[in-house]
Image (cartoon, rainbow over all chains, first blue to last red):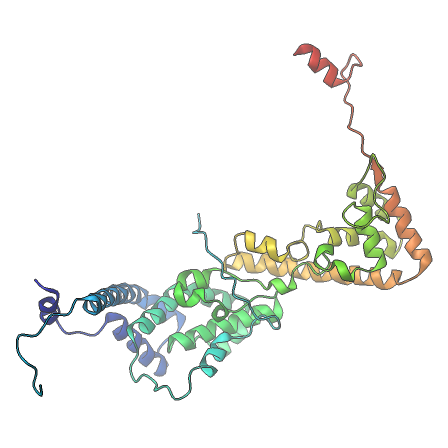
Length: 81
Length: 286
């Protein structure tokens, strides 16, 4: 499968690190966080950080591939030309 | 074994070693740049990593400064706010225990949060205040005499041919004397880097060649104890210099002790039971 097809086929979603970070921020705002609570959340935080970094690397790699890809002439004339 | 860390040679703030560069970063952000409405993934990951790898900082904060910890707590709200809480702890260590840089002063915390929060950057501007080679041009007369007597620099009291400086002998002689002159050995050790106190003997170069300490309760306790001891020794040394001043008679007392601490540099001759030198007996046997 070509990179573009893979990108189109990929499911939509938010980076897990963002989800967890925002959840923690909300909990902190609501005064629901202390070191003990953080300790309980630690496995979920570690997992979210790992997955978030993995997704970030994947996105960076895809972005670099797209940026470095050679130009291909379009088969149709774009509108306005 | 810990991973060897490449220490950043970035120049760290000279005064109040715990100046937060985070504040500087925020202030120096380009004006007019639109603020991102949403958190970006790398910032979110940093936020989580700072939480994950900063638990020992939280524990030390609670252990060493319970009042401040109860009052201020830890702000987990964002990466920046969490780092500020960690910096608050470092500032307390800097103000009350020993000079150390805060976490955000070091680039490593942004690039590798695990190592940035684990590696302590003690303030080398405070190192070795008496070491002679760090301030050779500013040495007082008595300091020059000590350095010269030890054979390092200057000819005034350089040991004669066949003689060497013995710090053990100087210690013995100094401790036999009464009053402030008895501190001469301690003063000499501080100048020559032989006090066995990390804050008095370690210079910037040695610091960069060695493994930095970890942020752990044990290291904090040990460095705090050493720093307190270094301050006590420094006070004693400064009292010694104030006592000597430019008093010729006192300078002569110092000179006399230094001269007596220069002993003949003869190899020790060990004899066997038969009375022959050990070297001779060994040569025969071989």
